[in-house]
Amino acid sequence: MRPEKFRQKFIKEAFELCSIFGADDAKLAEFFKVGVRTVQYWKEKYPLFLRSAISGKEVFDNRNVETSLLSRALGCKYEEVTYERVDLGTAGDPTTGEKKGEGQPGEEYGTKIKTVVKWLPPDVTAIIFWLKNRQRGKWQDRPERPLRFKLPKIVSSKDLPKLTSALLKEVGKGQMTPGEASNIASLVSAHGRSIELTEMEARLAALEAGLHRKE
Image (tube, rainbow, N blue to C red; front, side, top):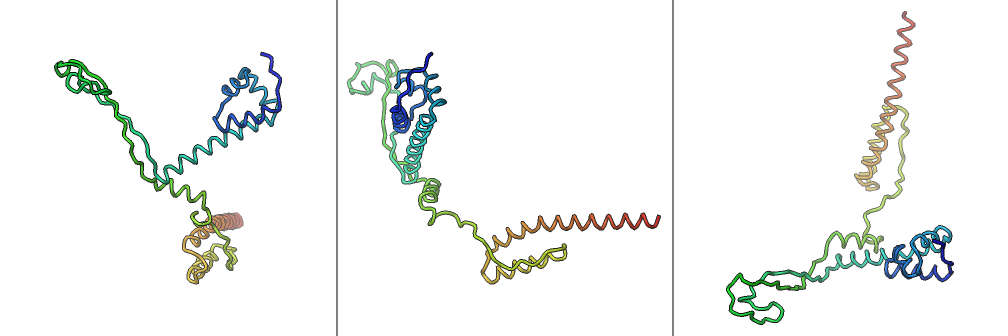
């Protein structure tokens, strides 16, 4: 199918269709009265058209997701529809209430549709997620902060206890939380293991050299 002539106004129209109605390629093709392949060809040939469609879908998705999330955070009403089987011989028409005669129970049945408005209470998880994203400065978890303290020089495994003492000292002064001290200790612990491995390799090399000399 030969691609139809592209017009610049299609860029704006694609954004509106995608942002308001969440249009996909098939819906865009239907609106522009072309085939789906033509829409795909336009996206490849005209970057602004592609970007417009993508941006529109992002707006549509974000708006609907935010609305749903806010509804769960605040609580919302919803309708619940139930279907109940009734005996028309005794209960009558479920829509008009008219009796269907003096039939025996079980001879004629219908369906009674009942719509009930219910309240969905606020969801704590949705509340937390909403506040952390909309009021980050007030509600987000405590962010990591740079820590400044005198770190002892660590050359060998014998120096590792010095670090532990320095961390305990900072925690005692209130300059560092126990959690922060633990994180630093875990980080340095990996470094300590590499030092110990290096020292062990050096000792083994020295031991092997001594054995060779004796031979």
